Length: 505
Image 1 (tube, one colour):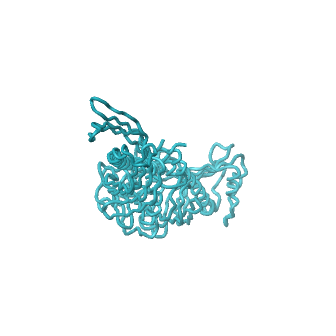
Image 2 (tube, one colour; image 1 turned 90 degrees about the horizontal axis):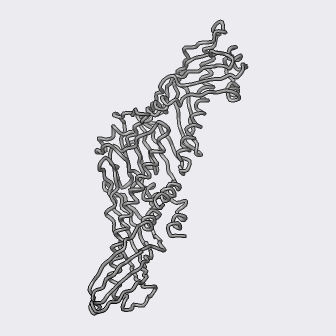
Image 3 (spheres, helix red, strand yellow; image 1 turned 90 degrees about the vertical axis):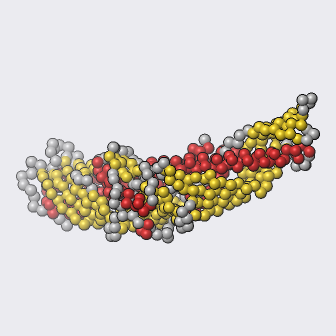
């Protein structure tokens, strides 16, 4: 098994700590100061210090990837040595083995970036040295395998900045300190004359090569990770013809207690994109008690409802056993004859769909949805519907997430029926039909729609991989004009495996 294969195997089930540097990266058309960007912001993410601690525990895995995946170039050189003449040498096939990492520490540096210190990195570098020395009268050439035992500390001072419409992490402030660098020529631990000659310039050369390549590789892995996480987030928020632009409206803000990023949250359906100009965001709306916060504005959520409506997602056909079970619900109003006859007809079918664009808003009590729904009762042997009506419904909804399922609690605020029409075979409108329909909507219809939405939204989130995340006590809290989702979490282990697979292949 190769070192890279061994590293892949060992990283199964672990997480990505360099998310501390790059999980907030995104694309934006412009980056302005945060206060100016607030009113254009639809989504905010706040990662607090405890969450950073969780992520930092996994930093060593990505650092291992950087060390293992670095390509160390061959080095050619020459120097003049007393009594030997001109010495020409080459260092080739430099590889790393037996890599272990002690611990990782970090510091959130206010208005600057994130400082990460990796201590006690032990590794053995192996390679081949070729050399030739002598004069115009004679020369000697040879090839020797060598090992360099090393112990290193690594310091990365990242700087999050905004450039060309993209927030990037600059990790060029990268230092390696070598506490041990022991050269072994073909396993020889005795300080022979040849070793004494080579020790200084080989160890200095290895230091320079390793430092340059490791810091370069960390920066490269960082950029790959930033793109990977952004692609993953965009895929999570996209479904079919509906997508959400999570580009940044401002560069992330870093304090000693949290990292906060500001995202557009613009909904795109086909070629139409929503606009946000009056978001109510203020940093004081988010606390620092939980690990992770998502602030979601009504002006980002309402267009999602609109896009889903135009995409035809709010419609349902109900028949057979499911239909019969629905009408087992006991109502205080007697069932009209035409409904009873319809249920006994051949292949009865109930069609329901949204007849208007749903409207969504949030208050301190709950989130609210108002919509006009159309309902049609038909059967296989009738050309025209037995019954058609429209109902305007307003419900308040409280959402939660437990046992990897979305839970919606809906309470009707307003229900009315209109545009009731019946088939030509019914001579006159039955007394009490309107009253029955209104009660049926309240006690059968709303409950059924909510159950569909719970299953549909849970299925959609599972498809996007939310069920793979270890979310601890998530809460969905409504406020005036926005919803706050707060939670603690365990790092999504599958993301590291997928990231390293793509990076190391």
